Length: 121
Image (cartoon, rainbow, N blue to C red; front, top):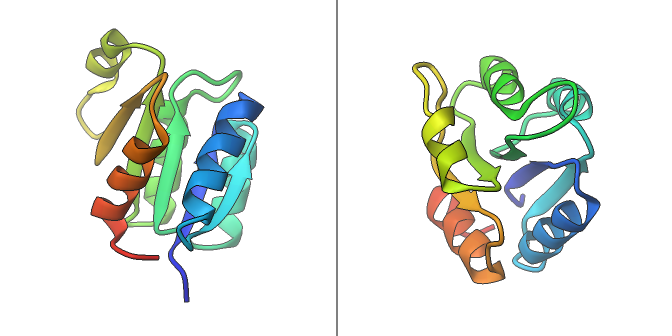
């Protein structure tokens, strides 16, 4: 059974880019256009990895990560951000994050990081 990944980003181009990059490696990928949709998907089924943008309308990435990680102990998390300064600002106590991707990131970067966290699909 392939490892399952949830990608949450309000930018469709980023969602599709990440989804295709990981699906082509054999991972089962679902996407969410906002934090509320991501949270609903995580309530419905377990995921092995959450890839979540920090800046999303209404429900920000930090809250999404905390909420989903609370539902799914052991969940691995990669945060997507637009700048290195956001990475520093987002590292707060209690936010469990396994890796960061700063936009723009390459296809090999996302595949490598997911592979390190999950192993082969």
